Image (cartoon, rainbow, N blue to C red; front, side, top):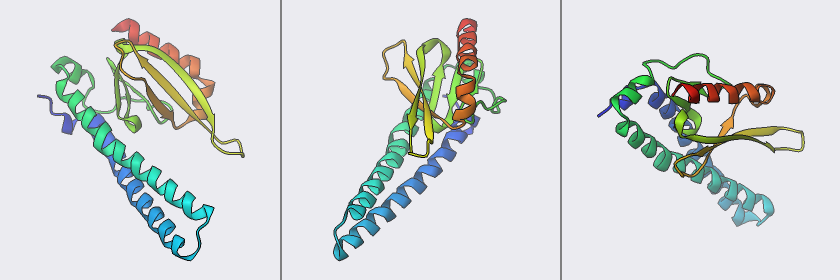
Length: 179
């Protein structure tokens, strides 16, 4: 059994778990405020506050009670060689504030994603406009060769990523060829 709890990647994901607790608490507060406002006046704002709060609670709970246990199970089942390939410390650099490249794995702590390069079938980047002001989010969709459902990873530094998308794809291919 691997000592996953002392591994740098598991610790990074645990920090993300702390953010999820904040999501749940803020979501609960929004739902409570939305419900309290229902007693005064029923409006679109009340409904939106409550729905947004419910979405935040669901997102936080899904990560804490689904993603983290799956990661724990994955890390426990890893072979000793695969586990050792992660290393003792986070590799540098931390690409686009989202990805770490290790010997055998693409690591994305914000998505609890520990992906073997040889399991990647296809990568696509999708851009989603978030606001009228032009803000956007970029997601990397990872499709797996073994038939698992794809994973969408939100890229935090989307501006740099969009400029270097071809470089990112080339790094993935380089690591796939080495495996």
